[in-house]
Length: 368
Image (tube, rainbow, N blue to C red):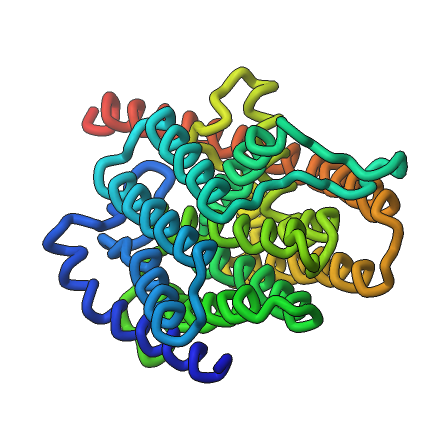
């Protein structure tokens, strides 16, 4: 069944990518280079829709579906449509967040699952959220959705980091009795393969496409659902809640750091900027490919720590405090890069100012 679902997802996504390209041009679903967007030419924003079509086709045709899977698919469709609208019309932050809250709430109600038990994170006993379960779940899912949305900044980055998370989920679900969740994780990996080939313009694809907000939000919502299913199953959990932190560590750490930096400088957390890790690595002179591979490798290391400590049944509090220490180390490591980037920006501004001054002088006295 897994092989058949993998092939179905891969083929359906591949076909969707080809069929949706002309639709993107007619519907103006294009990413136009301007401002901080430095790619060449208008790029179709159909990656997310294609991935959803591939995933939904394989799930409906191959996997056994129940109320939870059906609810997730409907919510996934809703988040994709929201993303398409955002890609086309650039929706306001308030509207986008409001819709994400409603879809997350629908997901919790429809599946009957939410983050009720966080485990023994602090070493003081299990943390049961009780009446705070739904609000906390909504907050966390919003964080995961926007963490994956924010990390989508260069070719192949979101797809490769998401691939690491889905691969980690495959390993953990395969070691437990969660065949449906295992199948969905495999299906997502299969759908990401043609997308990445297209996004990176690798053979046989010749035209670049982007994921768009539809794709990044779909991935964030789906990973959230799989993590909740894996940690909150009332019969048998696939892994502990603290392990989930390690599976999505890199997007979470990058998002939290960026939000803290922006709040400190009195900017909106959702404002555009070049302050993410991939921007800092690019400013250091790394190529896009090297940056993508470096960040994917970091994500793989974090996920591996989570999988290994889960299998060793390491104390949950040790894993949680270890995560916090790792985040602190991440902040301390990034700090010099931020200073270097600011220095580069300052030099660039000075050079630009000098160049503009020289041009004015030449324009005024050059013909004398």
